[in-house]
Length: 221
Image: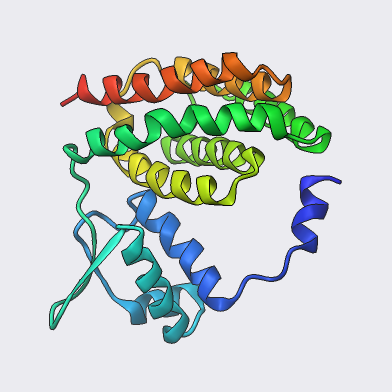
């Protein structure tokens, strides 16, 4: 079964889920800047979704540490604090390799084919011309596909949450980062290794990928 047919069989997203996904992306990509006030009425109008689902979504995003609410002051996007990177990496360093190894063991033939197709598309990216926001969206897609392939929903939920926080930091520095071609090639190797069932190899690749990301960010601060 293809990814498209799988998606078509899933239950339609509720309005609150749609609002959650849309606002989450705005926050992750820093389209809603860190510490900016959040107007639920304006979001409701922009998204074409009622204020009640938007407010439900904001409550979920507060649990994700993407927004924070203060009594009588309102709701704000959380700050992007580089000091949080060490805490985020402390969680991702053991869990990203675990997800990669599980994915290499658990991926179905259909999922393996999807991983190879994604690797082909990533490999075709021209780092010299791609818009940085689009590059970050590809990064999100790679990691979320691997988490899904791992077949552990609790691990997936945890890693999505902390990769989202890491992505906000990444977005803050991506225009100053060099060696983006290396970052992309690491994704390609990881996806192909998982599809090929290379359990130990992808665990090492995922470990080095997270460590390398933290080093690259710290070199800019």
